[in-house]
Image 1: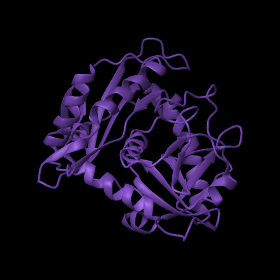
Image 2: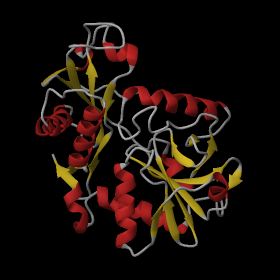
Image 3: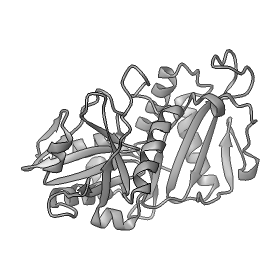
Length: 305
């Protein structure tokens, strides 16, 4: 359950949580054309609060809107300030931030015509997406029977609301089977991404992650690549197969919600020793040091409230 807060930013104004309502004929509710972001604010080691890579998230929101042919009614600066304003209004020192732009009511049918574009920003407390134990011990995942979107079927570089029906179906499928998360293959049979995360594997000290051909350009993914390269570790962005993943020494997911979550098992096959691997453990620890403001070289990724 989402923990209720006091205020929601709606079309440029802070309003009470329970008053943030939309009409049942909201076009996005029926047809799925809307865009959103997932952003995190962290309580830093010095007691301050900072939003992780806010500028990059807002840039991606606007990229998604452009890809979806939605005219944003606010500037990037207004959305960024709205994220900060909503956190402050809810007295949240850390939490999750969800900006969403959607097509409002008006014309029905698949062509939305001049229906207005509305924007909301919601914030709430949110801990580890897959649970604290997942961060420590890793998770069991299964390759879904659902294929990830082809690049010319859905726009894979955008966080479009309707894209996530694919994710919902895949995750529901594997959770019913007793697994924690779904991994999907692309339309050519190569490993793509999970329901809401990018994937990395490690073999012989080399990190490998799927390239940006058909996956969402994850901001946490990019952060991990930069962290690994700064440590002098080789990172390869290329396609790999499910059997290559089975033989990996380590594997982990990255994402704003998932952060850095180890994978201990894929399709009932243990990855490495069946727990968090040594390289994954270092990356995870470094990532949390970064978001909590402990490493000066990454302070430019943090936006103070």
